[in-house]
Length: 106
Image (tube, rainbow, N blue to C red; front, side, top):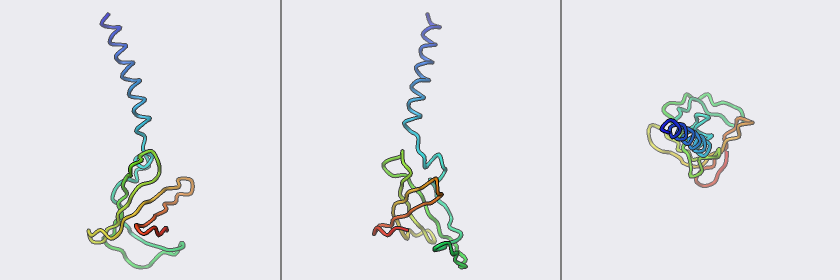
């Protein structure tokens, strides 16, 4: 009888574990984007700046919906926050689209 209860308990735990994993899937975490990144170069329209960057960072954060490819970001220069906004990712084209606080998109 104890052996049957143990098997039932293990099956129940595995079933609950699988369901909770599916619900907590976060594509931003899976693609290892959520963290602080150092900006080494900047460019516009596929033209890279020759300026040597130092101490510029961008931090990607999750938003209220952890099941999509959207989130929030902060930019820092010399440890001072210089900008905030939202971002979205297109994995097919490897593109991140940023929208600033005042809704400028780039």
